[in-house]
Length: 209
Length: 209
DNA sequence: AGTTGATAAGAGCCATGGGCTATCCAGTTC
DNA sequence: GAACTGGATAGCCCATGGCTCTTATCAACT
Image (cartoon, rainbow over all chains, first blue to last red; front, side, top):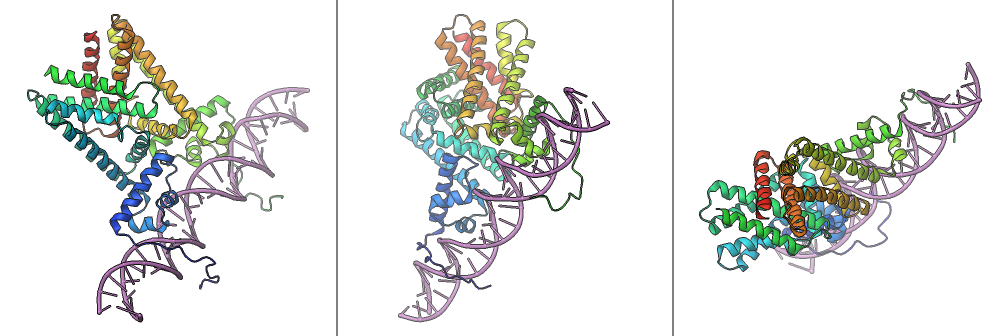
């Protein structure tokens, strides 16, 4: 069928971007949508409206909205990893100072951010049903733990591999638990208190071994 | 308007239940839906199909699906609290044994359960947008922490109030972080290892003070 | 400058979601 | 046993969701 009515309003102008730029724009818009409206409010239309593109673009550049969310997960994970690495490098060369910086960076922006938790929760909610998300989570968590184990080995060379592994898991869990509760409800304790608790646990792990 | 076509199939039989039974049935169905299909797959129709009732009942007994989810949050939180209290009572009268039981119960069924995490994640995802959920969360978390603080005081009477508070927050965070990661991915470490880590942290908190 | 082909827009399609309501039936009361 | 009360059903309405498809637009190439 031929379209009977010509468009009353001319079609909007647009600029042609490279695929990388477009994908990044969509990923950023997805992260903001997840943060502001949660997983339930993150629809194709909402993402594309925020990105300033039409809804057809999403399917054009990603294999559906689920794939876009998975890509956003990987991207946000990489951003967090970068922020932590930057904090480590800024701490200088002392192994203990570097370990400390790695742990405490979790309680400062941009990582200590309720919006980031909202994004993360959206990812967690998809791990159960989407194997791709589960794979990304395993990657991200494993990378973080490996980095922490490396810092621990340098800060306490006397530790055995088993001790390093347990300490890394334990410190990661403590950090995650404090971070989670801080993002959910700031009224219980402060980021500084959380940092003190983590530092205390870190010293215990180093002293014991 | 009168209905023009008489129903080809007679209407289904039904049984009349008390409001409490119906509400509990719907709450249980909601918890199972959240666990199996995540927050995204938990619709009015899915809940009611699982509960074996028609979709109109949900609106009849709850003020929309959000209210039902909030009720489910409160119910699941109460169940967890009950399980922990039971573990504490089963530990006898020794204060340290009771504290230990409270902490370690988090790594045994029914609390260590990926389905439970799925339910919890659904709740977290609503805290940001629904003040009622935030209020319930504050209640549940506060109650848990108060209970832990009480056990700590009895196990280590020499601790100051500030020390008790910090220890409770810290131990809760460690437990939550380990529990979270265990539910997300069992391959990283085992529940027994998690219990050992928590016990170690508990002993540290008790010895120091 | 004209041509070309991929990029982008935007309306539309079908499915699903939540809530509403007219209708029906099980248990109670007289 | 008959009328009554209110729990329970099932279908409907409208909004929104993801995705497709056609058409318009732009930038590179000849």
